[in-house]
Length: 533
Image (cartoon, rainbow, N blue to C red; front, side):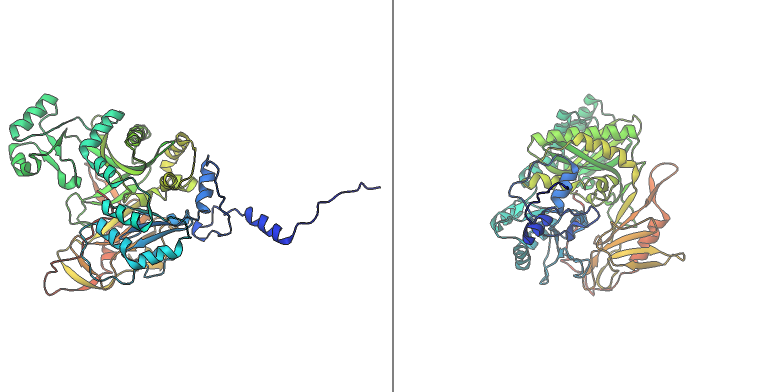
């Protein structure tokens, strides 16, 4: 006779549905922006101990997170990884078609002097406040991130009940000083190019100080704050001194030996578990086809040959040490570092610190390491989301170093280079483009970001100024992102734009047309803040 089997009583259908909902797991291949809202949030989450758990945490996140800026460029595509992540932007490159981008409709003319002005204006705007309120559950404080902010931004967020998930403006201003960065780097074992920190009031004082320190005859002098292109002075003669003395006298300065160097940029995140280092990138700087500013930053490249494995290991160790030292100052989260490789001695030096999200973040978030694990910026979010985690940063750093040679991405910022002020009447669409066999620029499809580019034949263009806006010398027209390289090394040193890069630049410029103003526009809109410098 068969054995009798005692079966448990059948569960009510509602109970079965509830338990099924609790087992829901969002596929890695599914954008977090479209993840099911039925995944419950436990009152208290357990400690996150690996990347898989970090990924799941963000794909089921229910706290609204906003990136605020003139454009969504820096963190565009992060909504693929983080549920409830949105962008609040002054310029809408998609004309309302991007489901996660919000732009106020009422935008009377406003003169902005900085990226901070734009962000503060956006936060105060009644349409923005209403948008955030609609999207935020009762009792939840929305999180806000941005590149540019100041004490006024902190005050606005405090009044409105928003959490500004960034280090304080006071701490960031303190660390922005090239003098402070140099001192902290020395303490951490991340040295700068041989230098002295001093004050000099005359050519004779400068020469005496440099000779005592053995810095040679060709010097680089930097003042503490400001764009390095405008506050870095190359001095090798008394005539050079007279040219720049007005900017140097009375200032604390960093006086360095001038070296032949190969600059690279890298982003990193300081977490409670240590510093995680992203991929190293070269920079596009000073190309007349892209920018009217001599030495001005106009893009980045990430490719396998940015650094040799030995140099990459040295540079990564330098960045980790600096990050750990910044952590002792109370800093946490995202930062960017310029590293200098002395091409004569192979020494690796600390260049400059940018304690903020940067323009390189856009490429950092599409690397092989990001796709294998999670984008680097998610570790920044972890530090500010009130979640406990204990992850092995050494394992992540080691894995990402291995994957650093697996990807090639490039981006370039296309500025208006002509001395003109025009009312734009035609502009290119945001989306995926390619060049056909005849060299014609072809619009292939609308797109939300560049994550789905397949190969070098395609490029993503993010339009900034639209029909009805003004363009002027130095204005950011748009941003191009593509796989493959956009610059090449010259036979006798230095670099140049590739034929493909120049073709793209000319083709996109041809898509813009406008009517010149009868008289110069005295108060042209100001925005020079795609990348923090």
